[in-house]
Structure formats: C-alpha cells, structure tokens
Image (cartoon, rainbow, N blue to C red; front, side, top):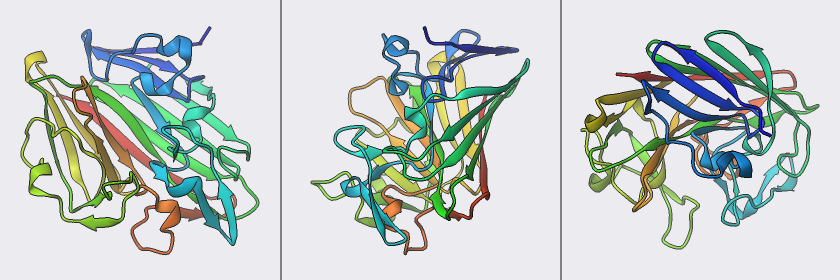
Length: 289
C-alpha cells in the first residue's frame, strides 16, 4: 500500500506520494483540480506519469542514443519512455519524508550510482502551501567523489478543456527534425506557437523553450480559476507539452535543455558542474488567482 501525505491549508488540499518518485498525487482548490486529477490505477501501478506532478533530477528531457560522455567515459542510460532515456533518476526512485508540519513537506532522495545515473547525489524538494498557492524549493547536492553535471526541474500536468488558455513568452525554442525527438536547432518561436497573448494551447507542441519570461499563466474561465507559474534564474528553460486530443497539458520549468548532456561544450545547455559537496538550488511558485 502506497503511503500518502496530505497537506490542507486554507482552500488548498494536496496529496503527496513520496514513494512514487517523490510526486504530488493531486492538488485541488475548493474541490476544483489545479493539477490534472489522479489517473485510474495510478497509485496501484506506482506510475508517476499518471499523477499530478513529479520531479526531474538530475536532468530533464531526452538524451540522444541513451548515452553521454563525461570526463572521457561514455555512460549508458536505460530506456524509460518510448525507448528513450528521459527525465533522470529521481522520478523512478522512492523518496523519504524528511520534515512535515501543518503547511510544508520536505522530501529527500539519496541516489546511489547505478543504471539510472552513474553518479551519487542527494535531491531535496521542499513544498510550502500558502493561501496564494504552492512554492517548491529544489536542491541537488553532489555526493560523488568527482565533479558531476547536475540540473533539475518539475513536470506538472494541468487539466485542459475547450475553455483553457495558455500564456507565456520565450526568446527561442528548440526544434526537432521530423524523424527525431532530439532537438537539432534553436530558433525564434514560430508565429503559430506564439502564446505571448493568452490563447487556447496549440496542440502538437512538445518542445523546450529558452529565455522564458515569468510568469507563464494558465486560465480556466469556466471554472473561475487561473494559475501563474514563476521560477528563479536556475530554471532557465520551459518545456511545454500539449498532446493532441488529450484533456491535459504540461508546463515544466526546468534547468537544462533537452539532450543538454550531449551539448556540454555549448553555452546554453543549462547544466551546472558541481564539485563534490556543492549544491544547486532553485524554486518554482504556483500562484492561484
């Protein structure tokens, strides 16, 4: 039986599933879902992708060929989704509760080197609920014996219907070739994808945007609800995923670009190189209007 942790603050009710990848199972405000509702069988199947939000440690996105080279050694990663190495190790491992009070929860993961990721790290998520919404503080500490690349992010799913609107601005977007899900070029955001003004989400986007302007904003006029998403400078990229014909979308503040592990000689990959014992920190705020 999966152990769940509840936090109720004012109008907000959140349920966490630490053992399922350190995930948020659900979040409602006055009974109205803020995150996508729990999918059938999600808890029984222990599937983070069927929950409301899961963490991305120590990287987000896909890795080309499921391999990368670090300090002259090529490391192989497992296929976790559609044959791809994706989203790191944290969402595949159980987290533990480090602290809990009436309005906050801290979760910790001590990763041991293995197939999911070859280097040791400690990841922490601190969730704080307020009348305005939810703040998530993210930390990753290098507990390995050598410097290692590190990044993080969040993968929240949100409800979507015919009345949903999305608003965000970005300087660039990473585009994929027609036969691949790995980006090969960074360009200005196409006019067809421009969400600078609130509009219905454009289906088919599954891309990483660079230089996004805070906040991103979602609105559900039929439910009298809107949500703004902000993040600090450590989370320089925004992944937007709008699958066709589905009742959800994802707006993901992340540190690194997709396949950044194979672009570490560039200036825009988004990874930090952490010396042993060093820590990378960042935070994301979800404010309900």
